[in-house]
Amino acid sequence: MTYAEALAYLDAHATYEKTGRIEAPSLDGITRLCAVMGDPQHCAPVIHITGTNGKGSTSQMITGLLMEQGLKVGTYTSPHLERINERLMIDGEAISDEAFAEQIAAVADLEVLAGVRPGYFEACTAAAFRHFADEAVDVMVIEVGLLGAWDATNVVDARVAVVTNIGLEHTEFAGPTKTHVAAEKAGIIKPGSTVVIGERDPELVEVFLARPHDAAWWRGEHFDVVDNELALGGRVVEMRTPNGSYSDVFVPLHGRHQADNAVLALTAVEAFFGAPIDAGVVNEGFSRVLMPGRFEVVGYQPLVILDGAHNPAGADVCADVFFTDFDPAGQRVLVVGCLRGREPVAMLEALRADEFDIVICCTAPSPRGLPGEEIAAAATKIGCSGVLAFDSVERACDRALDERTADDAVLVTGSLYVVGAARPHFRKVIP
Image (cartoon, rainbow, N blue to C red; front, side, top):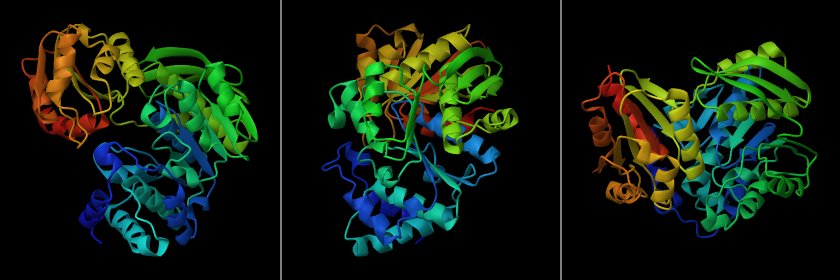
């Protein structure tokens, strides 16, 4: 199987990716597929991460800290920005095209033997486990794709189960309240797990504590951010954890929320080792962290920022970072696109779209992309000015750069499909 054939195989097996629907949520298929592979999901201890927002940043921070401890780390995340290879990483390096094709070919060969037709995400997940087993990683950092209990990644037995936070999301599967969402996400907690909970709501914390587990640490009680200051290129943070305190830690990511992700990641790694982490390891581990598409600055004069904020909670954080940390002096231009299933008015209100001088709406490059015209209608409804609509991300980005001055700022946000398309386009058009 070639790389192109591997991508075609996945596309032919895509359902949720195209429709946004899951007919019968279940772990049966991935369980049977992994069984015929020899259960590679048990090849190494696992740190399993769920939550509404912050999973990606937390996963990468955990990976950096584990690598600095000298471990070989397999990291599985989703979705990807530009290439699917980004989902399967070992020590921060994406899987090669050849290795990816080999792993997907193995999944395809085992379909009949397993008696299942895996979906897109199931096939990717099985390929990741097999790849990590083949490469003999020391630890796997696994990010949940959707909720938790019946997510394909939940065939692992987490040594450490991490919860970032809880918001109203995927209520078609787990609604209608945050308590229901939390109950689904709590499914990643296993009897032997140490649970690290970033959520502050006591009622939601209780949902996680109700699951059988080995030990539990939660924000505010066992760990927290003590100080969180803006710095050039990120934040300088002081943190307390169950095993100690860490001061003057530089986190090279934008936004106050990244300090919350940092202390969560550090606490998860302490839970994994059952001991405090050397201060030098902490500083070097965080220095490794790169998060493309998460408040990534890709241009100056005008300032051009990319941030995947795919739900209202993430959009609210995005707006706060843009207006507080950057506070551009010139015109503010918003480029936004989202998928069907998201309420565009709620997204735009969370982004504070009416505070931008120009709002450019585009259609995300996905079968589930909401037409730019519909987003534009929602923008007009909430009182935005200078509203435009385009059928492609590239055209929207080109218009955003037109007639910009050095003091202006362009924020491209919404679906990661939008950010993933904008990123290579800006590489071509920004000197």
